[in-house]
Length: 155
Image (cartoon, rainbow, N blue to C red; front, top):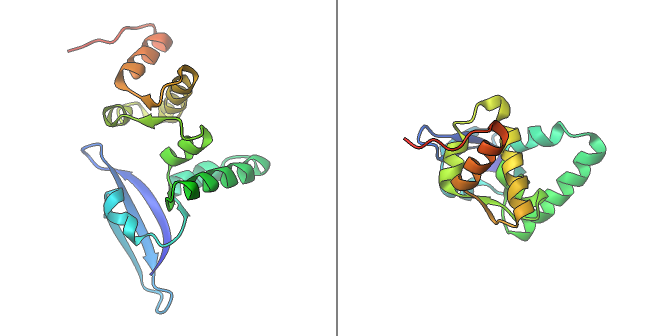
């Protein structure tokens, strides 16, 4: 079986899931398997870009895209990984400096789609500027208060 692509999904519980699409090179049979990244990683036979990461790369100007592609793939190979996801792409672009706390990732899902990517980039940029290795819920609250002039409201 040869990996054709990976689609990043979010389960209702807010956990990450992948849909790995593969094809038999002998007979042409195509199959897909959905599960957690840990469960489906064994089905990936080569370095592939997730559909979302590929879309993001394709939206870049060609002269930037080729540089970003090389930078990200070098980073992925150095970490002995096989799949370029949006999160891995962001880590590679920032030298692997920022990871997301699981509670913060789950909270990001609640951000409206049109501003989610911008919010994610701003949170990661803020973390890098402060020398933080992780985006936390506390950082999210702080950035939210700074941009929207509101303090965190606890219920």
